[in-house]
Length: 382
Ligand code: SOE
Image (tube, rainbow, N blue to C red):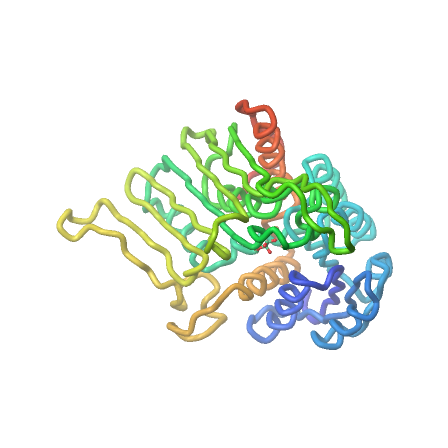
């Protein structure tokens, strides 16, 4: 397939900007023969959505998501509305024969994710979840180094996702803090990212987990006025046993004062280690224990050469790329998969695999006991 492909996007705020930017940039920056047309954007507030459409170059704006799914000029339905809308829209879009790209977390819980993954399998249409951090060049490069055997058998995966924006008690109870809309707190919002990175980078499944969570501020103002009880977790930590014998340690919080988007991981293997920090995202740290002792040490690899993942599409070495490029890289991979009729990952089964871990984490945080993860979610990525 080559030529043009119509995109319809549902949702228009923070992620709406990130996705719009990706759809706009991917055509000129990547060589893919398939180029996206920004056909229609949908939001509940007609005026704001129309303004968004004008600013970002969407051809038209609508307030009913069904109009996006029914539109004959739309082939890709991009969902970046709040979590409680994902299942209904994605299932309807897949049933209408659309390709679906859904923002993370795939759903509010495993039950919803299961229905979405089943609809995706039944439709036979391409589908993906915007776990955009897989497309940070340094992260994709870490996966390459692991596959090349450079750190050998892995013993530890340690990941933190730290923010601080809800530490202020005057921050209102926005949708990301509302149980009905979001499903969970930092577990769905932040742990989902680092659990997905574990699924992407490790060749072992997360088999069982032991978690603890906390709500630090119990009541907040609702944006529409009035106080409300906070029912979702502000912080969640868990340990995990991997199927291949490794141990994992994960932490996510919105109360890490001074940390804005501190998404880091360290992987320790028998031959070496890797370390990544999203706030310094053009670098990957590598320790190689096979080097002679007197020159051993952590090496900082700037991941911006043409030979590094995605980088040949961007600037010359030294002209760094950032957060928004991860979404463009994912849009490029989706267009290439459509064009070449090949698989796209992460797909809804990967979203479900992540959600099953999150469900086990929340169960364990509630009971205080180790919980086995239901691993029956289709094939892992090769
Ligand atoms: C939360 O603050 C948030 O916006 C997440 O929802 C995004 O997925 C993350 O990438 C940045 O932080």
